[in-house]
Length: 146
Image (cartoon, rainbow, N blue to C red; front, side, top):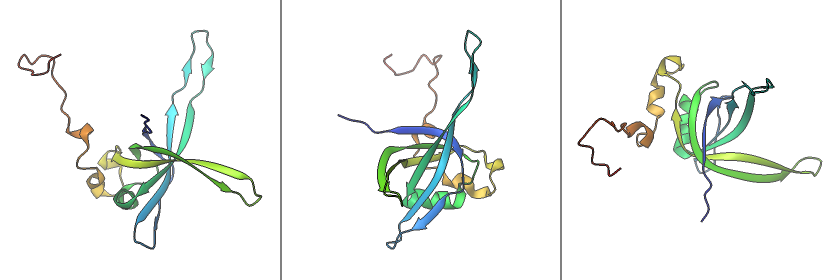
């Protein structure tokens, strides 16, 4: 058994670049930045903030949503798979690029911060994280066995 799953929460680095294949299928590409905050070790050593940049690829409906509603600076939740591909650069050297092929996306930027007022429509309708209600520990009629 093997698993290839990535979960990222970060900020969009550039507006999505959306292309349409000859078949009409949309493909969106953009970068997403995730950061580890700066901190100080017990011995006083300061560790600076570290930012990682991820190449995000969206297909079909997600790409069309990104084209309409995703903008530079927006905060996104992305779930997907890591894919690495190679190509030969103009000098003949083999280069590798790692991309995240997104299976789902949730927009986390508040609507008031978005340039387009309709941006909330871009959120997936079947997102489990939104539909789950917290379980109260004080409810004596709770049916959970633990």
